[in-house]
Length: 173
View 1 (cartoon, rainbow, N blue to C red):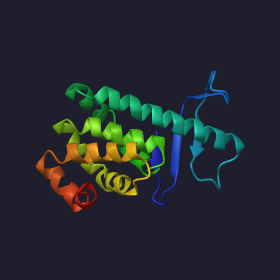
View 2 (tube, rainbow, N blue to C red):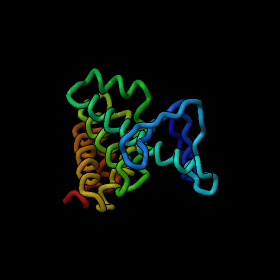
View 3 (cartoon, rainbow, N blue to C red):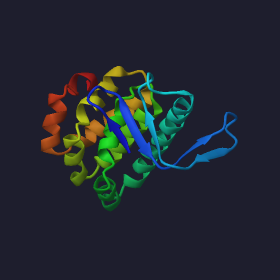
View 4 (tube, helix red, strand yellow):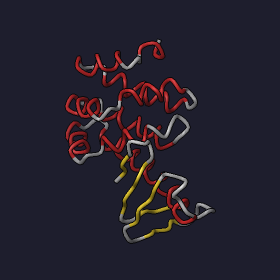
C-alpha cells in the first residue's frame, strides 16, 4: 500500500518485498510487515535499501497491472475495483525520470481503454500529473505512455473536458 501525504512525502506499508542482489543474480525476500518512508530525513540505512527495493517492486507491479488491463474490460474493471488507481496516480509524482512513473502511466493508459475505468482515473486525480509527465519530456517512454493515457481518457466526453482543462492540448500539438 502506498499513501502520499499532503506534504508530498510517501508512506508504504507492506508485508513482503523482493529485490535483486547487487549482481542481479539472486532474488532476496524479506518477510514481516515493515513501514517504509520516502522521506529521506526519516530513512536509515535499511530503510533506504528497502526504498530502492520498494520502488522496483512498485515499477514491476505497475507493469503487471498494465498487462492485466490491456484488451480486457473485465480485468480492467477488476484492477480498478481492487483499488489500484490511486497508487498508480501516486507513482506518477516520481517524475519523468522514474521507471515507476513511466510504468504507472502505461498502466493508466491500458486501464483508460475501457469506459468504466476512465471515471475512476479522472476522479483519482491522474490527469494533471499525466500532463506534467508529458511536459517534462525527459523520458520518451514516459511521454509516450502519458500521451496514450491522455488520449484514451479523451475518448469520452466527461474525461475529454478534464484533459483539455488540465492543459494537455499545447504539449500534444
